[in-house]
Image: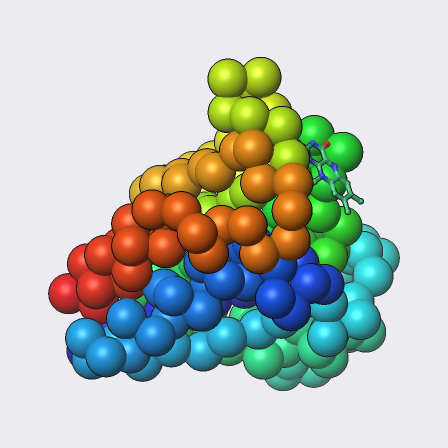
Length: 182
Ligand SMILES: Cc1cc2nc3c(=O)[nH]c(=O)nc-3n(C[C@H](O)[C@H](O)[C@H](O)COP(=O)(O)O)c2cc1C
């Protein structure tokens, strides 16, 4: 059975990237995957303090215990999925604060290699504008640094919250959910 960790990055419950997260999770679970979902906005994390206390007392972060469950789930997962909107040409702060805490895997000597990273992102500007670059640079760079394979699905031109529900993106991500469960 495949284990998936899904980390969402939008504060809009009925927004575009959460619609894609919902579609992916529903299909992956139907296809037999075990999925753990973390909504970054509910964790109220701030950035890494670089204190180096990671895993010194057993848990991943010396401060942000919201990250501890995320870290445990990532360590146990085959696939790590991030869904997010583009904020200011880049990764939204909610996701960035989680990724900054991946420092704990290095300091704690955790072997996270060999996982598959999937990024699903939406933006207001169209794909052709090159708006995905900030996401790709940050997420692909981080994933490959950790020894993860990388896959990205980007949907530009999604200015209206929930507009993506009327597009073929939902079916595409449903199919992805089924494929990731295999
Ligand atoms: C704070 C903020 C910053 C944004 N920055 C950008 C941006 O730099 N480029 C862009 O194309 N869209 C930008 N957008 C639009 C969102 O990326 C777009 O509406 C996305 O589909 C929202 O996804 P969601 O409904 O999952 O939150 C921004 C929206 C917000 C709220």
